[in-house]
Image 1 (cartoon, rainbow over the protein chains, first blue to last red):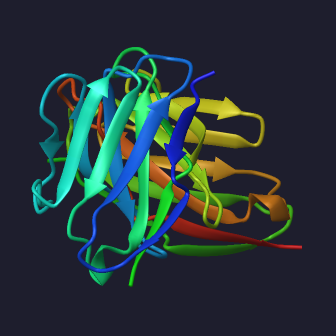
Image 2 (image 1 turned 135 degrees about the horizontal axis):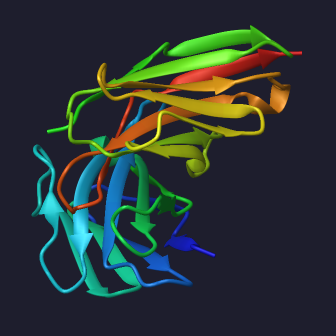
Length: 116
Length: 113
């Protein structure tokens, strides 16, 4: 149980274009999902907390107009990287908790974004 | 907000030896402390976790200890095997009901056969 599916696993796009990443909880309802970003050989940095039916809460330093998050249902959250630049190239990982906020986080497989 | 510091950044041990990774956190109200193992290019996998009402937890070769007073917690891996080689992250969940986890910097563990 507690499977989180993330698509695509890899994406290459040109500078200036937008990329959408989907995160789905397959066998549970996730009121809250989290989006992390990980640069090579670095830690997972929390970008935003995605709440179903409401606006996402962004961490300090994360541009909400550049990283659009939509949590339209209890099983789906999307992250759109708008007007992508090479410095946005990174590993993006979503996660969700099963049940209460005090439950473990389960991660998606991640999306390797490369902006050329 | 919560800040998590993790040490060492790299750790190399011989197969069969023990490995210890330490983390400290800043928010005294933090109540949940998981450890994740991440292999190259893959998602982090939860290996063990501990809650603030417990001082120690063990699962086969893996154990975690928590010292709330000192605000630090540690991961102990005994009888290490080459397949234990990976990056390990500690994390802390702070106060409030957002459920978000803040991660340490990670430790690259290499177990030499």
